Image (cartoon, rainbow, N blue to C red; front, side, top):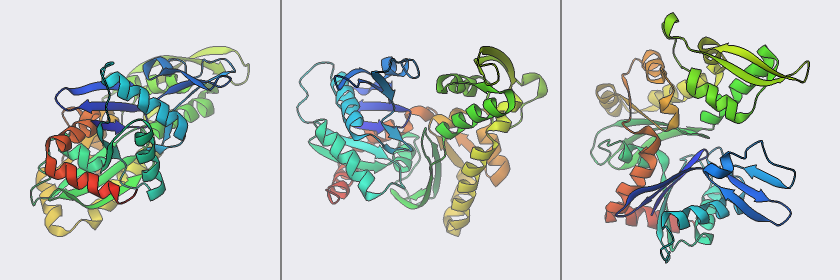
Length: 335
């Protein structure tokens, strides 16, 4: 079983079946009775809409486990759903993790998976899994650059011969883009909006690079007005959203530039020939490939199915016993 345990979404791959589950990484818990009420899509609908005794939360922040108990509950539920009620046994798991996480954070992922019923737990760094899932020739002696923009982290890595030559992990990604929209709406329009509304604005209006004027989208946004405390609707333009996201986007671009500056010359020449590959949910942001091409001077491609690259990569590992054994043995040293 391969798992992309993401800050925003969790995806599960089962050998012989393919991707069997794709759900938001959200859990709703009854605090009085200490029991889970909902997990995944159902729990996401409850965000910001629960009574006092119910809390809907995301167990992962910045790509790592922030709430161990709820992460274990969520993982257990997703594993059971993936098996559709058939006997679980003790599955072998390969889980994608950010390349920049600490040993303590790695242990938390392994412990949560074991508590959820895993027999063996292997950890694979997300850039390597994403590159495998995107179809990059990472087993060859050639330089490949991948930028994986998830919900909590952006992973920038140069890969060759099935390994990471160098990488950088920054805890700025989709969540920070959403938060920057919330901050902008409050500061400029005096409007308080929730995470779900900001996410909708990002999907419908956001772009990383200027569009033609006639293509700039507009949208009516509803929220609470700061001055009056009453609900209000304001019209927001695409260029405003782009302006609000300028700071976190600059952090991502700088991480890509720093990685390129540190890349050995031979591998840098390969990257110029092959280009940069974008993966993760952030790759779906309009104009991000154009922005990176403009800033680095290197052509940037978007993976065919960016949201599923990491989980597809874990699937490739499960198909290849040599990589699987290596991933499992590397993880077992930490336990």
